[in-house]
Image (tube, rainbow, N blue to C red; front, side):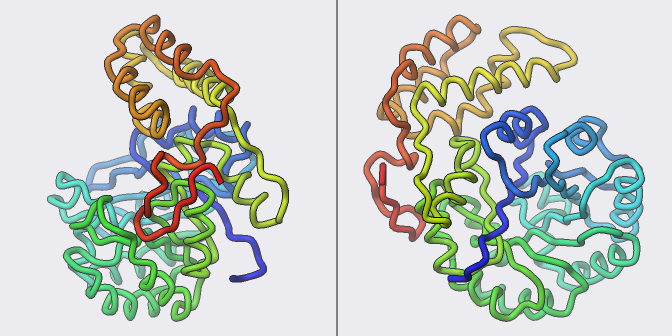
Length: 341
């Protein structure tokens, strides 16, 4: 394991890793680097004003990477120039891993992994115009992890400053074990830093990922939505310091802050639609609480009164929040997850 602490970043999650979440998360430690939702790029596109605000109004003091998704090298280069002219983003990232059928169907996201020549063209088009860091976020292949050997050979020759690797294929989506051996191989062979991503849902799984891969960075998505203190907890664990253990009341305060922050950025506020909006976050936050009852009940909430009645009943407690979303302590994606340890 390297002596240098890993760079911790928040994974981009469409419609979830938004400005309000960043602001609330920052008050609880937050990552070292934020990555935006992806900017959709096509022939007549311009950067989304809402996503652009997550860079221009973040006020966290932390670097923000603007992620793009698309497949035309010229359009991606044009958009990178526009993003840099309209914001102080620290770098540009290209999504090579989104498994959503609607994205792959447009030969973007994970579908790009089937066209190595096009990946090279994209990197070559972006390098001259990107003034900050140029990074890609990838998966191990489209159909099988065996494709990663050819991808790795390509990545080693590209003019990149870093690569984030989600240790699954596009076909595997989020269900399979994470293939850590391929990430570890990339760490050894690539001439720039590698960030490991995939099923880092707790401090234990973060430490396990770091030990298995020796990656320079860890990118956390779902685990950070559920537990916004995870970045500070990982820092504390690596430093050998006493680790903060949030209670259910702390979790309720986090939900309350998020509820207000999302409302403050809504252009058209409506109570019921706001509750629906919050459920995108609650799908992750509610994991591992009350044996699934909290999740079931919060999904049925319709009004703010319904929403807070469920939260009050399950979260008004000084009980420590479960360290892991899985209450039975089973192996999760190949990691030995020690619940409440």
